[in-house]
Length: 85
Image (cartoon, rainbow, N blue to C red; front, top):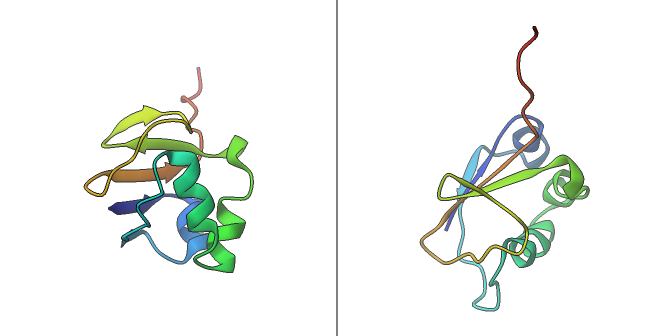
């Protein structure tokens, strides 16, 4: 599974991307987030408030209940706002 981190998530985790092999019990984005929090203090800090994070699986925006699999690309990023008027 490929994990991508953008903006301040990249800074806090200390990496822009990583290839991981989570345990088979990781079935949803929420499961993955909880598992990733255990990888480092930076991961735990970056993923501590899910209200500030958006997720995409294979480039589609998804919710925390979305399934994930070993061949997926999962991206974590802050909410994006539009430009000025």
